[in-house]
Amino acid sequence: MPQSAAPSVAALPVAQAPPPRHAHTNPRLRVQFAAAVTRRRHFLRAARRISILVLVDAGVVLLGRSLLMLARDHGWTSPLAVSLFPLGFMSGWSSVTAILVGLAFVGGYATEERWASTGTVLNGVALGTGLTMWQSLESLGVAWTITRWGVVTVLLGAALASERRLLNLAVVRGLFGRHHADRVIFVGDAKGRTEQRAAKEVLKRPGMHSLGWLSEEGGTQDYLGHPSAVWEVLCERGTDTVVLCGNLSRALFDTVVEAAAVAGCRVLSVRNRGTLMATQPRALNGGPIRMLELTFPAARAGQDVVKRAVDLLATTVLLAVISPVLLAVALWIKVDSHGPVFFIQERVGQAGRVFRMLKFRTMRDGADAEKSDFASLNRSGDSRLFKIPDDPRVTRAGAILRRWSLDELPQLINVLLGDMSLVGPRPFFESDLAAYDDHHFLRLAVKPGITGLWQVKGRSSIVDFEEVVRLDREYIEKWTLWLDLRILSATVPAVLRRTGAY
Image 1 (tube, rainbow, N blue to C red):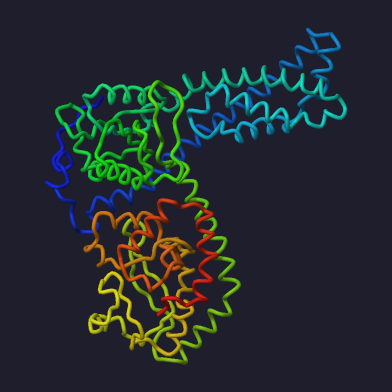
Image 2 (image 1 turned 90 degrees about the vertical axis):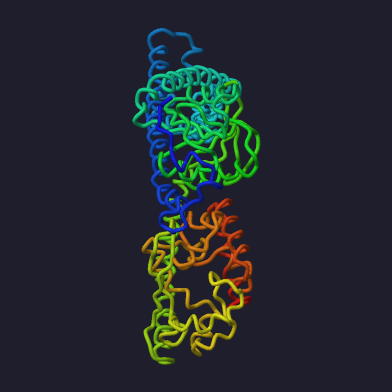
């Protein structure tokens, strides 16, 4: 394991070395800023390996098909061989595609642990060959079709299983050596027997490289720091994978898993506990030590792509449909009161990035400068949630626009620009970050949204900032595309109910 100089701040518990309070030096924001790169690295590494696997699988299927035909034409002259492998049997790319689809359907490309699983390969080949042979039931009969299906499944399945094991042991290690390796940090007692066994098992996997240990006990040459300093260590090391090997307190366990997940790291745990940031923790097969995978950064990177594509498509369609409404609202604002049509304000987005958020102006011109004069009327009592019922600064048109949330429509342009998403936490002010506690920063791990759980569950009627943060964390931890669709479908009824709208 590599040697490293004894760290200063990172080696101490957080209680002795509190994180910097300034927003842009806070390690929680720095980790989030680097998370997109880490997830992209996981995604590209997985895509590279899957692409190689698909190409080699296709080659083996084509070679196997050729060998079957060669054996029929030159070695087998019995009617049985001709019946099993007639001229044109599994010809063309349709049969190859069917087998690749079958492998994908049973998870043959899902995780490295299943790539070399003989059972997974046989199931995939059985499904793929079944797709290509079902039509022969009528012409050949059930008995001959099942016999042909069984022979092809066993022979081709054995060939693909052997190919995948060789690829996993040889080619993958060669193509993804230290330069492309997963950079791993272990968490636990670096001298413990169970922890050392777990570390050895992890490092046996293709493409794993140890950066060192986070441990409550120091004294080893690859000691990186106390587990409570995980945010600072992740900032410095560019980690890809975090492995929890030993017993930690619940608070430390949650801190490490949350930090690693926000950083875009893959998280493995030897202990069967904890589901933070993972909708479906899964067990990894293979090896004498059972491990759980708590996060899926490669899948998350792919989900980000899907989410962005949905945002672009839906926003483009919406803007095209509602453009007459936008024009009418703009004219109404100009007629109703003096000032610009749009209200532009700097807000904080993903990883603390500042962007210019657009809204239709709903207050008199210059109202933002009067904010301090009306601080005593703030219903929430929290400057991070500045909400005043019957705000005297709101114009006549603005009151109606706010009641029906029409003032938020220009943020569709922010979605097109990539500053926001249709669904996500609401963006706050940069000045609010100075008052954030450590657990508040997680809400900045994703792009802010026009709507979200906060909006559909109460809008301005929720005046407790901790409740807002809880809803934002719930959204981040449980995100799926279906959750976004449910929130979007619930937004219209929430707007029509006008609950908490002012």
